[in-house]
Length: 179
Ligand SMILES: Cc1cc2nc3c(=O)[nH]c(=O)nc-3n(C[C@H](O)[C@H](O)[C@H](O)COP(=O)(O)O)c2cc1C
Image (cartoon, rainbow, N blue to C red):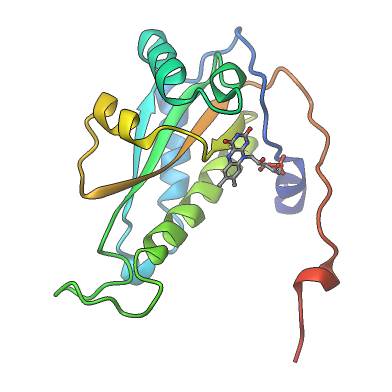
């Protein structure tokens, strides 16, 4: 798919088809695309925890995604928890922060990776929903995610069962200044 079409066609989807299961190979393709993103000193601190099994997915949705109906919206979708190893991107080897952004750089790098991931999904004919409303502590416990990682988002991936329209975007002049 042409790049401009790809970025315009991607939408957050909140209803997934029960007829298509996302495969392990597809998830591997998505995370491989994520790894192509640039990162602070090439530290690549993003980590991915993918839940494909129906039992675990149900438990994760019920116990960790019960905000804003995220549990219902992501039925039939695979779930990917995204984290980053903190105190690494944006820090020197002795632990001194390179500047005031500190762990914001780890989050920045993860976002770059996550955008690659969701665009790759769009290219493969899949849809996604990034969720920031989730219970990080419960997710950590359920998936045994180390304390050295900051849990950020959960991304649902599946076959869309709806065609959302494009939400309004700001005008260029609202966000861009030239000097
Ligand atoms: C960091 C982040 C967190 C989000 N969290 C949620 C969420 O918890 N639940 C939800 O339904 N949508 C969530 N969204 C989806 C946004 O609402 C959506 O991206 C936005 O409305 C624009 O729509 P579009 O993705 O179709 O362009 C989140 C998006 C981002 C980037």
